[in-house]
Length: 300
Image (cartoon, rainbow, N blue to C red):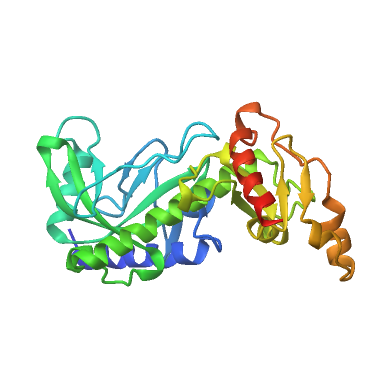
């Protein structure tokens, strides 16, 4: 086991993933499954394997948490310990299974690996991870996580104090939840704004009907695919959406005169029906729309 080679390959893998993730920190399966270092192609994940070791290394290079099975389900979370470590389950029930032994070796060396968290089919949020504890009785390993951009070539989660560890883990989990919600909402709305049908993904957001800060769940029925202009207008109560799926524009805004963007981009939406998912299970929750519409009326 050459620790120098192990560390160099892992550092190169983290650098590679930092380059291929999109602006939301998400990598496609095609982009993340392997990379080239020197003249060697190194696989980073294996089909069906939660714990993966490439042939060039003696220890695993990645662990994976699968995406939710249903497009309307919230993201699956591995458990998190009270001291803000990810609790990653063993492969099977045998502590001496070779993949579990591999993670145990990583624990003793302090070398990093990659955690891939699925946010949709073939779409993952990668982060850097270090195994910091092994609990054979609970069949789990504890791992510290940090976002890719915060992990240097000598990343060591074990050196983080409690405040830093909590902050980094929270950063990873917020990103996972946000991107899982976005991926599932935009897919349900066929990549189009519910109000204007704009279908450029880079200009679309997944808007919460009930904000997450007020207990809104990160599930598709609590979401709307909106372009950035209409997302901002919805959040500002410039426009509202009734429970019967009809949009309304605030009366004072309807009375304004301010050029074509206002006239065609906002005012023209008044009393129009919104675009909704084909699946009834993914349709906007009428009770949530009603609650949010009451807020819009109070602002009018």
